[in-house]
Picture 1: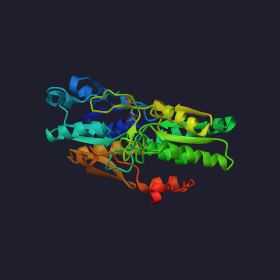
Picture 2: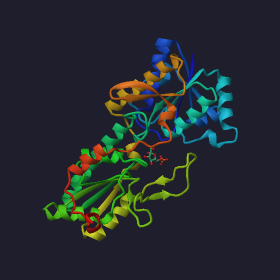
Picture 3: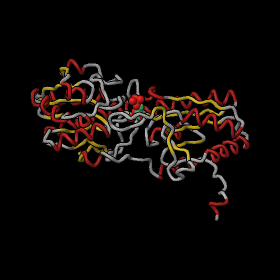
Picture 4: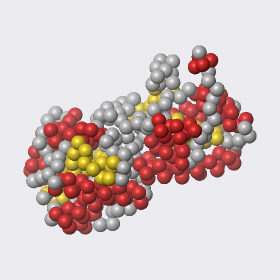
Length: 358
Ligand code: F6P
């Protein structure tokens, strides 16, 4: 069979491991031929390809990034874009496409499936927010990078009697923040799922210092929201750029600095912030992510040969399963109460405010 492969959206550790597994199983077990589309959907739209044979995937298992490169191009946003993709796939004789990406990449895959293109998806994102799967590869690596950073920040916070705020990625979900925050022993963890009151955060830190601790570490997801007077329920995220990408996302970021200023003002404790940013996305995948990515790549090529389309490989418990792409897209998978309660259980409860008691 002639199979196309692409990687779309933000890169993440493990993309190369998926490509390698699909190509090796396809060549060795199914006699497949592969075409790599460059820079996500842009490669399909503009007919930019590379040969994807055993030589091309040799030695890429531990490498971060993606040998196919990536982009946030959305063909559905271009006049006749999806039709142009189909024409290029037909011209190249592609019989099935493996699309490795997050919600945005999967939404294009779903549209092409409706237009009769055979397409199978593989869930990727450090944010771990894709519905229908328990874990996306790349997340474990990002959590390990963030946890190591929190450990390092701990020692300098301790040495200087400071509060350190660590801003981590995650878009509209708090998976990276809650995992790395718990694993790194953070004193306060702020996630988009629970908009926070800055006065309560300051109170929490003051109580900790009153107990004799002289430093603190705060982990904030980039999408964490201040409870505001405008919208007490949902608050508003801090953004670094208002303009939207082709999938309609604003660029988040900047909450770490805002928090550091507001905490210092309210507590009088010297406070600094650090933004981990793309460091969480780069570099070599952990063994967990290499393993998961390899199982996903293999699952995807097996699904192609079972004749499946419009499906995505997913992890349910410890099993690799096939689910309809439609189940994965359009709804962000948020951190659940079980994990939030683990974080709450580790810290002192603030006394209820008068209005909460009433
Ligand atoms: O979706 C992955 C992610 O790293 C988010 O956590 C983050 O908000 C976004 O991508 C950053 O995108 P970019 O690489 O375009 O700055």
